Image (cartoon, rainbow, N blue to C red):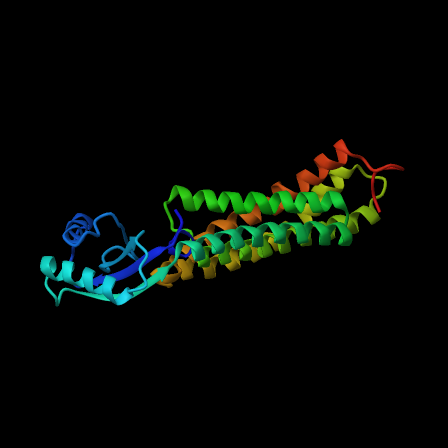
Length: 267
């Protein structure tokens, strides 16, 4: 469900001072030839704010706004609503933004793969990237299932999730590396398990503290950042899970499939 940022088109935000139904707004817009637009509630239910998304692209924003005002005035009266904002994104600009957004996430994952391979080992890098890709896909899936609009703020949330989840994973990896040096004779799986248990309380406390802030942001932050906060909420929960149950198990799997020569594969 691409937003105007990526799909292109015209976005109009309208505030109604009396309760109205979506069908009433849609019928009103049909009288001026704008009935094909997508109409959604904006913000908390009962606030009377709606987003009208039109695939029609026009540089004459004042003209579009005037048409909508004319249609809504005929149906509801001029004092029962106000047009709060009107935005336009051309189809080429939207396509470019979509392409650059996808590239930003891919380049971030490649950069992380290279950095962790240098800082730790390649097997750790694979685990981290798989976990991060898992976080992004689950979050995007949640957005799709709930029919949330995918916009630039949501893209920013995805990149934030990548950074947050990576931080959690690095903490676990650092403890694994320390224990590998201390427990050279122990099985690799035992070292991994011990390291996860030792960092578990830190991971949970950090995530819960972060979630408190995100939940407050989601509940009272307003419609403008609602989707941003929703994406962060899903991403933080999934990122906490993946740093424990995805990243490290992938390292174990990689070690079994491609063991390092000359021992148990440790530095």
